[in-house]
Length: 206
Image (cartoon, rainbow, N blue to C red; front, side, top):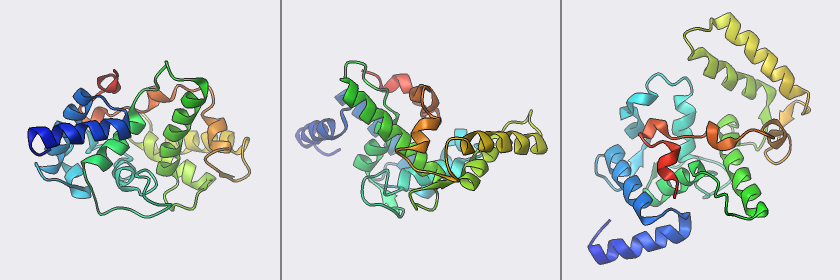
């Protein structure tokens, strides 16, 4: 990240923007350089070198999430061609465990940000709504990666999950309403980890 003094200034600036500690930023910068091939930017093809993603049934959605302008807080739609280290930290911040010392309002805001990140993975066309068809496709894709579940069984389970979702929404889900209802009572941190980057969620704790 440049000379020692410049790097120190940059780290302090990134700490203020992301709430990561200097040690966490250093660790994430090391992983960023691994992914980018020691380049200042990461492109989609760099993720092709992550072994843990090779057989992941939703690998394309994971790739997309890192370049989604909504997640990068750069716009309401579209995909970036490349991301720099600060962008990378922005995405990784969605995976940070919720700080239990925060006030109730801050905890709720952090939880909503995490859920919005998940919402964007389902909402592939960036129209701000998840149709039941989009939801069913993702569930079926996830189940298809399980070698113990046959294709027809996966489809039946996905159908059942979609019917359950249909009971709380009217054909489509919006991020701050129906989607929050579906995830109510579920510990979001246990569902969001970064194992495919060789960094367990606990590695990002203080």
